[in-house]
Image 1: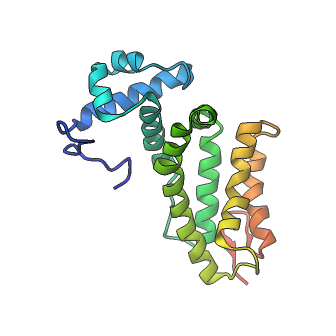
Image 2: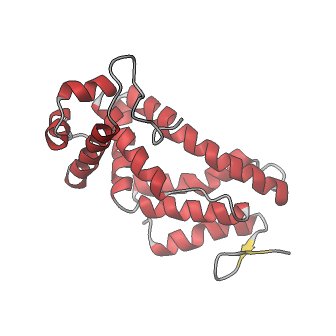
Image 3: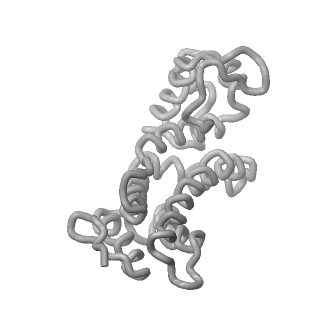
Length: 211
């Protein structure tokens, strides 16, 4: 069960079952506060105030402010970046890649960059973000890349892990370094250029051109 599929009767570390409505209220308040503030300036007190719950309730379910932010980010992010399984794997990867890049042009990009920045001075934040978000999402992408390799053999020396890095690492580099924008031209052209390097072409509707 992932972070977005927790049900009303789930508990963390014992204690009373948590209310799904209360959980959603807390996560919604967190995302709302992050519209105008940063992860660093956010406080549990503010989340409690805006969600109408006590600090004790929040700490009963999450060990830290960073944990609340990560859960709020994951729930919002996964809904908006689905992986499609009803099309050619290359088409599914392009659609997912573009959805991710588009999300990172706005609030989600600011949040994830702030989480990663905080993680540089607090290893527990970075570890939790890897465990709760990165590893799970990478596994989803890897499954589709492996299906791609079954229908279109990747070039020798370019395994699924390297292809994933070629596709996705550049988004984080642009997000964190800011040396180039995550603009419409980049979002449109970059994934197509990567696939062209491995012999996969798309038409003007981003449908794969079969040989």
